[in-house]
Image (tube, rainbow, N blue to C red; front, side, top):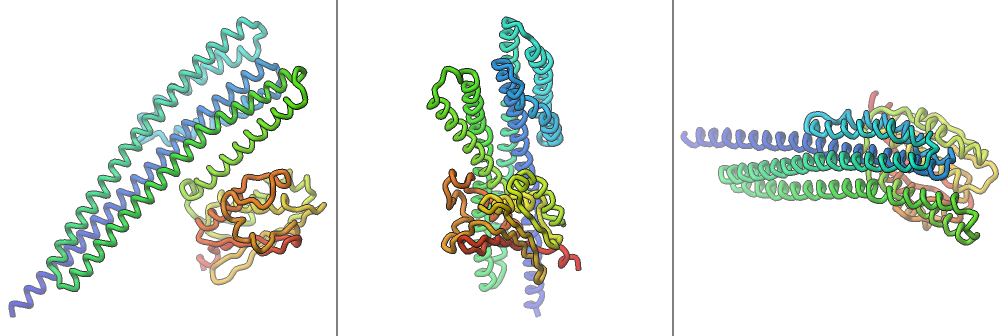
Length: 447
């Protein structure tokens, strides 16, 4: 008669421990998600600070080029950066709250210095014809730009400090939750039957394995973010400087240079331009999973129309004919799907030697899955390369034949995989190609 109550007490004790373990796990997950969101926002702020400085440097490059050459075309980087700067500043300020509110004064000081630089240096410099006055304004501008660099650096350091603090808190949360779960697991193992103890030990092993995988994933994401920031900040600026000043040398000293020297300069500018394009493509590739928007309803016809609008110059230049069939609504990231269609259509135009390339975009639906296809009548792809072309940096042709970085189809693959689909090609060399991929159909999910 006493065994029954003892079993009942043991059962309730076991249930209470299970409930407490679940509560700790849920709390750990919620805290980890919150911290992860803050980490992502902090990285976005770092990119925003860098973008604001990059726009200022583009403005400075354009102004210096105009002062040196007095050619209006050299001012294009300045004018383009002038239009982009207010949007970049507004976007940056929108994220300066909560954990990152302390960065706001640096951004305000930076903007104040930028406005002073425009009004006190740039505008007078563009209209002054006095050489001594230009030299004085140039020196004044350099000092103000150096101050802006310092403010950007201080703001970036503050963001990094907050990120390090968040990472530390995240690690503490993981450690404390892991220790708590381990202790509770041990207590449950001691209170349960032998079979239950073996089961809990297995759960313990899996929990540790999952914690290790989460830590490895977090480390991988952190390294990817750091690489993307380094590529954007440390590689782009020297390339822009090389290209800009090589072009400036050619314009200023063209009469003193022979044909070989000018040709060598073209090689330098072309190499810098191709490296910038490669870095931009790698950044887009690395940000597919870390900077994507939540998946939601997307009208693919609207996406394709926008892609065709973006490619209207290439389509007109090649007199390409593009036909679009009935396209479904799907669940996806609209900006990434736009990039996907734009890459595939651009490839269909590029890898085509016909006078009037023909491209067909179609779709079919089976069991809640939409299959999209982009078909062309271009040069085609030999069967032995059907898998290779989707790997990053894989090219089948020289740059002299077809320009590119070898990242486009790898980016398409990454986007499709993020949407839970797959991508493949059907082609025979010389007979065109059909690129197909699958997405989740929105119509099936809503019925």
